[in-house]
Image (tube, rainbow, N blue to C red; front, side, top):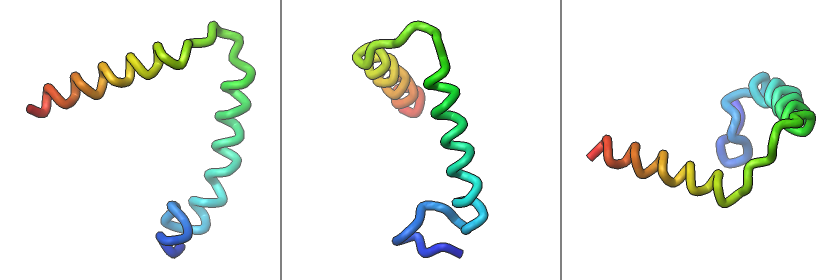
Length: 58
């Protein structure tokens, strides 16, 4: 068990699996040749999703 003050992972095994997974995700993103989405557009879409979820919760 890892100390939560030091690591966000619940175990050493999970921490060791995370790095290769994360690096693979980064490489896939870097290799993606699709159109770039402007930062402001992404933020606007995320804010709309959050607002809709908050409205559903009441």
